[in-house]
Length: 350
Image (cartoon, rainbow, N blue to C red; front, side, top):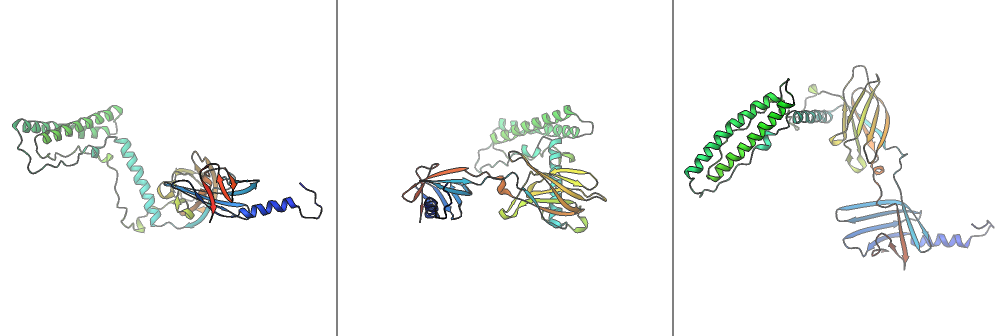
């Protein structure tokens, strides 16, 4: 460092002049099927972009020059900056009601799948297509096809009975295993019946499928039908997303903290929605949000008391992205920049 003599420092002037000569917009060449741009700004900041195949990556940060080298130091996500922010609040509406019901349907489907692990629909084969000029069936083949039907029908009925027993209030693991075995026997009998009719060049008869207990049938709902306001269940909802990037985040852990001390734990699902029930005389005053590994971030957001409605929460998704590099060094050669990570490439101004 030179002493302050009141005169200009030649070395300092030269460094500033050298940096200024590098400022500009650079384009990558020499790397097949790869597009990349580098913008060196006069304020010491840079923007970098690369595209190869279906991958697009960006980085921003600071750049410096030392001799015949340029160093790019990318900005890293800051763990100290707030990841979530409270945004606008809107009244409960039909869109929220529909998402609430969809989550309820998802839970019902999961419960039905857990109670009835067999899947009758999966055992039904596609219709067999036979040509019009197929040869007439032989006597033995016809007899085998008829016998296969005679075996498949009892297997179907046995599977129906076993499934009904397996979902009963007193059913245990043994009953569920018996139902699984009965469904497997039905599936085997169905395949044998189909193959026998194929060998005989006969159309496969429709003998139906095992009867599915009502407990195994998840409820259905017309997602496009209007929901009259008088039928709304209502609730408290959050929507977590990054509107700047048109993103909604699922699997964000959410704990709704009520004014009476009650806590409702859930997570966001499709569309970034999470719901909590209404509580008489209590309002949600805080929302605790958490992102799983590898991000592993948690944050508690105080909100104005919410007894019913939708609270939007913004998330800065840029903090969730690690830059494609932390440091990139480039050699300066004849006004071009040669990146150490792509030695065959060169950035040139146009």
